[in-house]
Image 1 (cartoon, helix red, strand yellow):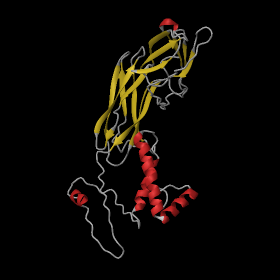
Image 2 (cartoon, rainbow, N blue to C red):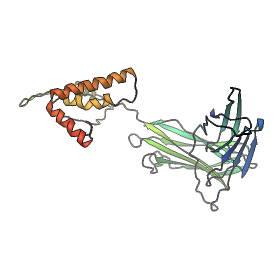
Image 3 (cartoon, rainbow, N blue to C red):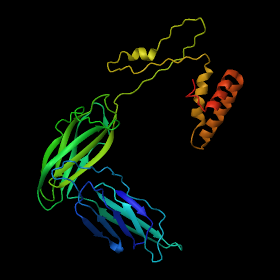
Length: 334
């Protein structure tokens, strides 16, 4: 369940900030009276838009915690007022409260609050997708009004990196569907999607529904994972001046027999002094963020190794001095 907790007295009042202008809630004002004089008030504004305007602002703040206030103080009468903006997820919330006095007397309270609208879309999207997947993205459409309704529901897809539409890329060509729902009941809609290979890394989906002057929408993002594994082979190529040698990458030679292999990258690094690669690895050992025994030893080892390298190679010492003057690190220096 979704939960939020705070240390308050049982005489607290929660005032919920009004929802965004651009989507219509299930009523102008609702008040839910809780036990022990705890009260939740939700105030909404009518959506201001032109008739037949299909634009719907989707709900995007879907965080599972509305607030966490661990250090609240009461006034002289023992009251606390909590002001916050309600998250946009349409669900049931748990309100948890724990209060204590200076002499360690304690009290606790647990309540439930429901956020809902007359027309609600509840998409059932996966946590992630893989390249090559073929699946149905479905959504429940709920009618909590006092009459039967009908309308249209729409799925829009965007590249999460570039924010460009990608409906055609995933086969979402018939993205607008019709629906009808009896009062107090729900219906469903689904879209068949084909995830391409190597075309997109993250997807933003948006589901919106419109019925008369009622509307709702939800938007979120999900990653698209590769179904391939990157295989890397490295090989040292020691060659003296004026010498010619041939080297064979055995693992890559065997990999060419694979029918699914795709060559990705080939890199050749050259240095006159192999100790240079040890120098380039030193910042990784020195810049650990924690103070555990292993990382303290890594920092000590890196500094001892750097001292040894500098003392044995004056040319590298000159490069270190140059870095100090230009504020470069080994990965940035040439």
